[in-house]
Image 1: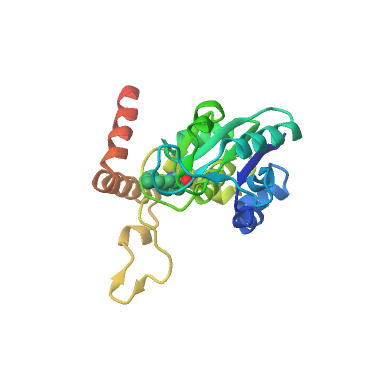
Image 2: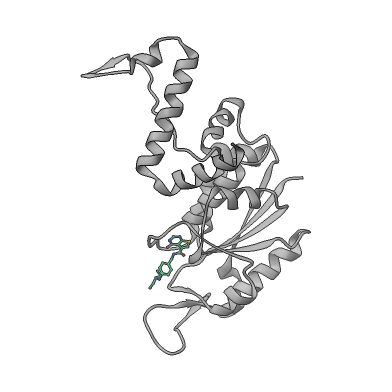
Length: 237
Ligand code: 9D3
């Protein structure tokens, strides 16, 4: 059974190329995933298509109203069977990581809710969202790009989504380390030569060099990842 992903958004068109191209597009063609977009504005009840309003208590900006959002979710839930978890993309969410993506890739259905304006009415968060997810601590204009990032990361994990060559590469990151340095032709470009070991043909030495490079790079650039990696290794010794 294909994973069904409903995307509720004010900007369906932003997802056009994303849904039809690359690994996500191919997975959809192969029937591994079905991505259905729904415009929240279709659930506005006035002739202007209003989906936002000023915040009670005052303050800048506008807030996404509960009614169009609840109605949109209830509408898509009638279209297909498992109700699916509602994932709210918001700066207040839990940071997206590979663990979360793995968990979501195991679901039968996901409903992604993306917003514009200053945020969602709190009742959406309290009574509609099952999980709240952020892409990280930086300000974007809306949840559409984070939703694409989530879908992309989840679809890659679906069995059959990646070709053989693509999936081999996943394993090193899954181990919790950054990538080792990679080189292609030519052996010499301007002043810069490819490290000798990679030309040696000694596969054992090459594997050791790559593993050491990956560890050193992770230690230096991402002490947070390095700590997790070390803690994961220790219990196994
Ligand atoms: C006034 C304070 N801002 C919160 C930090 C308001 C605000 C900024 C950006 C409210 C909404 C947005 C729109 N961003 C998202 O919807 C969003 C987001 C992001 O901005 N960064 C990282 N991940 C995400 S997921 C959704």
